[in-house]
Image (cartoon, rainbow, N blue to C red; front, side, top):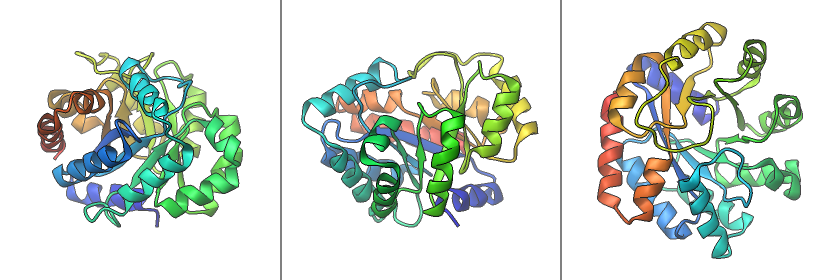
Length: 263
């Protein structure tokens, strides 16, 4: 069984929800990314998402875009990103317990070759991929290749995804369904849209896939408000911003607060 599936099954039995922090591979360097993953795993992260820097990100806001630019400006290459995943997946607090999910633009996969990239992602210890710029129709060719290697291919639904299309995406997503909370780009927000809970309730009726909310979640109070409606939250920009400022203790405090809110 894929580690993502096993993790959500365990959390369901325990009555807990997943906290999935997002890190940018290689910002400010690979050593720092691995150290941040180790800290977050020790604080209770249940999955770790690793963003692969790309020059033309699709939906990332200014905080993550800037992190991608910094990493690429220091000469980070695709093999370095895969190596970062491998080091995180091998951490004592991660190996065999915390799934590592790669957020990667399809351009990087295509350039390497889908089969070869998936082989390398699997060898690095990734449990799944999120490919935000891959439409459902194109995912139907990548999904089986990922499944052959025991990898999940997580897909996204947004507030503007038509209902019939959202049903098809939910049916074909594996691991979990990434529920984008707002129309727009990533970034910490003071308030989540009031219609989000209604949308989550509708999605819950369409699929038995775990529902994980990302884009905008940045505080324990938001996670607590979502807790009874989701299976996990994804927190990116708030963590990336703190790491950029070197506020490691605040990253730990935020992680611990989010874990407690989702317990």
